[in-house]
Each structure stands twice: as C-alpha cells, then as structure tokens.
Amino acid sequence: MEKYVLFEKKLAFHAAPSLLGIKASNMLSIKKKELDINENISRFNSRVKEKGLKIDILCECEEKALVLVYNRFLLEKRFENPDILSFMEKYGYSSDMTLEERIKRLSERIGGCGDFPHEVGIFLDYPLEDVIGFIENNGANYKLCGCHKVYGDEVRAARVFSNYVKCRNFLCGKLNMGNDIYQALKIS
Image (cartoon, rainbow, N blue to C red; front, top):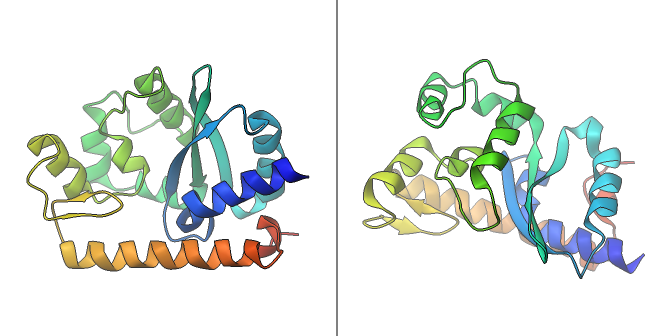
C-alpha cells in the first residue's frame, strides 16, 4: 500500500492543476526504484477514466520514466485552436491526428529522457505566445518566470501560477489528512 501512497503524493504535488481540471496536463519524472510505475499507472488509469484523466509514459530510461498526466477533455480542446494547430504543423503534428497520435508524436520527439522539443509547452497548457516567445528568445528575455517562462501577459500568468499553487496545496492537504487521491478527487 505504501507504494500507492508515494505515487499519489507525487501526483498531487506535481499534477494537481491537471487532476483538478484547471490545466490540460503536467509532466513529471518518476524514479523507477521508488515505484512500480506500470502497476501504479495502470491502477490510476483504470480508476480515473470516467473523469477524462490519464497518465501516459512519454519516455523511459534505465533509472526513470517521464510521464504526462493529462485531462483528456482539456487537452483535446487545446487542439481545436486553429493557431495552435498551425503552430504544431511545423513540428510534424497534422490537424487530423487523434490525441493519442499527438502524444505518440511528442514521445517520439522527446526520444531519450532529457531532450524536450519546445512544442511540449502546448501540451503543458502554456499560452501559445509564451511557447513562441521561448523559442524565438532561446529561453531569454522573459517577463516572468514561474511554472514556465512568460513572454506574454504576465499579470494573467501570475494569477494562473497562483491558482496552480492553490491546487497543489488543496490536493496535498487532502492526502495529508488521510484521503487517497481518489477520495480527494471524488472518484469512487
């Protein structure tokens, strides 16, 4: 049971905004020694499917796995935006791809653990102007640095970052009070 608790605490800490429905996805790295990743992911995915939540492994190394925790409904909605679709075409994502095909393409583009193609920001729900700004400025000249580097509306970004912290505090607080992640998310 302890292996489930540690996994759930990692999810609550690193992916609370996605789990609580205010962010399309979060990405986290999990050390394989700590957890049975496949068992935990399978258990989680089977329990949260109806809520549109899912975890996919993007890449694995000998020591760790990089996973995408996402809200299917929010992530699919993101790819309805014509500006995002046009931007993503530059990186080999066609407008007629399914969400699964897009995640597979991202996984292929990541390759080994460590190389992050810049379009990952689209999956992680960063504003398009921030993703483009990061690329054009090579990560420099940002207005604000929080959950990501901001090149656009810094006031809006600060508010969003604050909401992400509130999600983390709420979900971690629920787990610290003895709830499991499913109770905290009101999933039976």
